[in-house]
Length: 177
Image 1: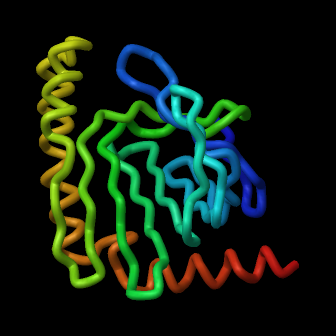
Image 2 (image 1 turned 30 degrees about the vertical axis):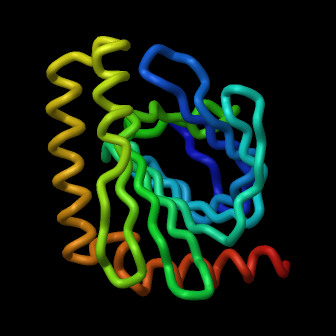
């Protein structure tokens, strides 16, 4: 499978377990695209919800997606520091139309001081019952919540302070050119 290349503008689409479209991010610039990882950046990009509502992101963000991990990470660059929004979801696929994944409701928000909070457990429980998540999937997601918490605590990957600096610098350079 080929992956998007550096400088390419792509769309990101998230779906629910039942196959319905959940959310679309219209434009993200690819900073790195390999068979394992796609790192991107966007700023004030249009986001379209499944019900037709739309809004724009408020700040620049670096995005981290994996073909192996059951989560993705959005690093939001704000005046008072970097906030992280982590979505528990399937590993990504790329089909030349968009980067795609299934969103499994559970999220972790990480604050600039390193503290974090698990979100949307009630939504996860509801969809787990409603969409009949298999036990194996439930186990995978719960183990990846723990893996993600380990990444946060150990400042691994996108949680390493140099990660955002490196990729945001590249993004600004590509935008200037």
